Image 1 (cartoon, rainbow, N blue to C red):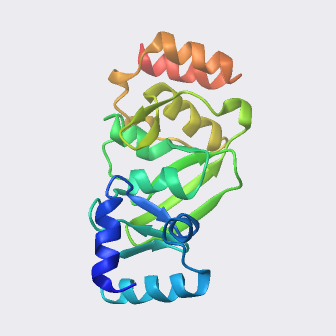
Image 2: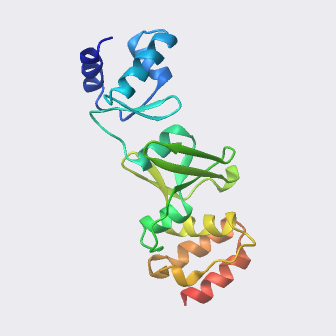
Image 3: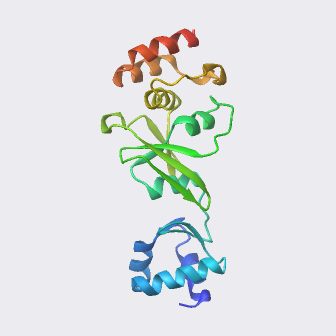
Length: 191
C-alpha cells in the first residue's frame, strides 16, 4: 500500500489506538513479509509510531502509556508506585509505569516509555477499576500490592499521603490477601 492508502486505513480505524501486527495482517490481507516492510517504511517516515515489537500506534488516535500497558501484556492492571501516584498517595512521579500481571515478570521499553510488569498470584488478581482504555488498582489494593511485592524491603511510609485510603476497605482487602501483619503496621499509621 502507498502512504496515502495507509493514512486512509488508519483514519478508517481511528477508534483503535494500538494495533498488533496480527490484527493489521487480518485487516489488510497482506502477507507478513510485505506488511513488516510497509510498517518499517512508515515508521522510518514518521507516518506511524512503532510502540515495541509487533505493536504500532494509530497516528489518528495516539495512545497514552497507560493504554499501551493494557494492550501489550495481558492480563494486567496498573498498580504499585504508578497507581499510588495516580491516586495522590505518592507524591514522587515514578520513572516507569508499574503494573501487575499473572504472567511472568517483564519489562517493555516502548517508544512511549518503560512499562514494568510484576507477577502476582492469580487469586490476588483483583481490586482494580476501569478507566478509559486501561485498568488501575484501587488505592487500597495498590498499597497492598506494593507491600506484598516488596516483602522484606524497608518502606518509607513518610513519603505516602494515606488520607485517601479507606481503612474499612483496606482491612477487608488485607484479610482477603492474608496480610494481617502488614495491616497492623498500616493501621498504626492511619490512626
